[in-house]
Length: 378
Length: 260
Ligand SMILES: Cc1cc2nc3c(=O)[nH]c(=O)nc-3n(C[C@H](O)[C@H](O)[C@H](O)COP(=O)(O)OP(=O)(O)OC[C@H]3O[C@@H](n4cnc5c(N)ncnc54)[C@H](O)[C@@H]3O)c2cc1C
Ligand SMILES: Cc1cc2nc3c(=O)[nH]c(=O)nc-3n(C[C@H](O)[C@H](O)[C@H](O)COP(=O)(O)OP(=O)(O)OC[C@H]3O[C@@H](n4cnc5c(N)ncnc54)[C@H](O)[C@@H]3O)c2cc1C
Image (cartoon, rainbow over all chains, first blue to last red):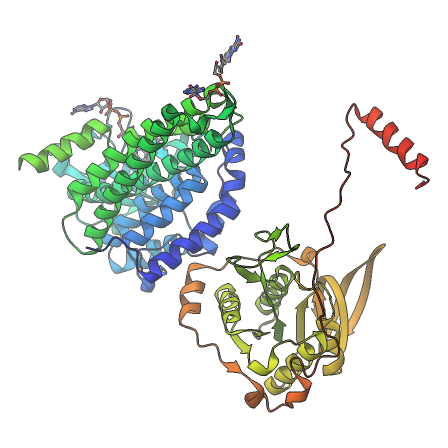
């Protein structure tokens, strides 16, 4: 047992923290208010080698592990939740290429993503298929050396800004989940356009747009992994995605706790800082305790993954727990701020809106519980 | 374009507190950082290298822990770093310091440009750069805020009291830079990992083959007898009211005291 990061992991985390605190934190509120994709932040992530942490050096990455990727993701989310969400979604495109891409696909698509020269997106969700991935309707019909795509994806993070899309489509309508295949689609391919951007409760700077495929012809070599094995690609991608979502929720919760502590120390009521009241102290104590537990769960999942051990159940627990902790933490953080917590003057108002996302995206809490129950009952 | 940058490690003044009783700086536990203007010097060297090719070598005279500052410049992208450190260098004033730096630069051989920060934030003398230029017997321009290079000549803009001065200088020369010249980059992840493994040689009196009488306390023309902070100013009064009222009161007061 060793809970310490290695020397290199800590060096990377600390470097990332400095970059994120100096470059992203001061502009985080502005990013949310403006609602514009923070492209400068993403360029900085690329410039400082943060985009391809777990990708091998051969394909332009840093050649480190998922623990390192997680603690860096945490630092990004502490500083700017939106940038953290983009960073997380990007991995949903990088990871399936790492795991299932052939050499040519890795060379062509993984390398620019790992270097941060290009942005990625991952698309499963459709208007009538969310939790039930097997029911997607976008279809891909083989036509000689090509596939023809038709259908619509919704809510796709990074849509429009991303250059490379890993998408799921049906290659065999008769065969449920076993009829699904994964494809790589480049922005600019004829027949591939972007539809409406979802008008969301929070994360307004995060694009969540429709992908529209109308007789979109892609080369057959853009099939990722095997025909009919796309469901597996998606599930294994989401296993790692849960680590990313979980650590994003932890980062957000940490940022909210930091604000709550600062406020509780400086706000005077009844002639004392409110931090001197036990009611406030107990809230802060619960927040800190739950954040610590959530963080350990996520890092354990990353640690197991790095060692090639079974991590999927722990990753689901981590995502479930961290996202629910984030909700409880932001609720208390607003409460500690009193009326000011309800005002946009303080960032906790934003954190309160943002936290909800983590209980929904990449598998709702109900889906996580189902996944965990499956492991428990096995 | 081979560039030599001189940096100094200084206490992080944003973290420094003053002991009210003794009126001296509390140095314990204060982290050390690269002198901020020197960071601009490193950044400018890296940008010039990116544009014109060549090498960036960073040198620093200081105690062994100044290696950390040098390591940071490697992480930012510098090619080589050398620490000038020796017991004999202790107590050096600006003259002895610039002499030591000059000897190291001569040992390094040819170069196109030497860059220093305009001043160190602990001593604030702004002397080492210009003195070093003299000792190397090359042209020097202080307070540079912009530079471009063409055909072995540099066009530089320097900050002077009432504006900017545009000058043409022939390479090689020395410049000191202000913080307006650029926004220093952070170290990248690849950079810090590389810097961690980087060998940073230490040169002392022996390696430099220099006369001990000209370095450190022995080689210093000045000696510090006492360091003290001036007592904090008192009697500050905040003027309140509308802008009009505040201006009237301020101007009235200044007139009353015959300042204007
Ligand atoms: C900001 C944001 C970003 C997103 N980014 C992406 C992206 O990049 N790529 C992508 O593909 N998708 C993305 N999504 C979509 C997201 O993954 C889905 O919203 C999510 O999977 C839930 O699907 P749904 O919205 O269709 O809800 P539904 O599946 O319709 O679920 C509705 C409710 O029913 C519950 N439910 C459903 N089935 C069951 C069951 N069997 N047992 C118990 N309860 C059940 C759910 O838990 C939920 O409470 C994003 C969504 C948001 C909000
Ligand atoms: C939308 C909105 C509408 C409003 N409308 C009105 C209005 O019409 N008229 C009006 O007068 N006000 C109004 N308010 C103000 C509102 O009543 C106050 O925000 C509320 O009373 C809390 O006060 P506070 O914000 O100063 O928080 P604080 O009093 O500073 O409280 C901060 C935190 O400390 C806790 N705390 C404080 N003292 C103690 C203690 N002794 N022991 C334990 N915990 C303590 C609080 O419970 C809270 O969690 C409004 C506020 C909002 C957000």
